[in-house]
Image 1 (cartoon, helix red, strand yellow):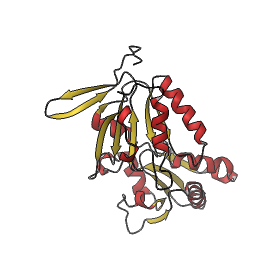
Image 2 (cartoon, one colour; image 1 turned 135 degrees about the vertical axis):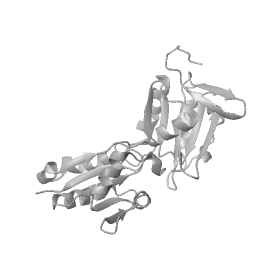
Image 3 (tube, rainbow, N blue to C red; image 1 turned 60 degrees about the horizontal axis):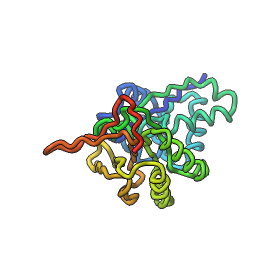
Image 4 (cartoon, rainbow, N blue to C red; image 1 turned 120 degrees about the horizontal axis):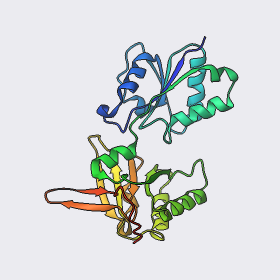
Length: 254
């Protein structure tokens, strides 16, 4: 008899943005696998065990959690944000796909969470109000040439683009080059939103035109949203500007 494997997302980091379904899964599980800072967001009981690992050990973490669930434990794999967006749900599915048959029999429960682009968008208005896409700028698992091709095609298609993993200690140049690629396609006035730690005490939201966008504004806690040519900025006297993308398509290209 196997246990259960819950895959949850803690949201952007504000405890109020963790879903009730996720809280219920956390209350049931006995062992928790995840990146240390994500596990730190949980208030675990004395009878609940945490197994922390480095952020780049996703597949090893997934395999270890599956092995424990297969042995009969109720296990929880913890991600930030939503577990299905550049996070642990895909790693667990990959491990099941390539692993022993018994892992396919585990009762798997994935709970949706609030992902970073939604938290950032809510802070600034509605930049995702029309068609959009999400991309990771990390070239650890895919070639940089693929990333730049996708950026260019998304911009040519008029999509708002949400960028995850824009910069890290080991990847300092990618965001600046991404801005360079986008400037060959998009007007310089298109708004760029740097949303750092949305919903947390150290939140910082900055908006600047693509022509002036400075990659140094971002770190790994930042989600960057690049508007489309149709994205608008609404000034409000005494209040922060609103940034939104109209629901209807006008065909504006510059």
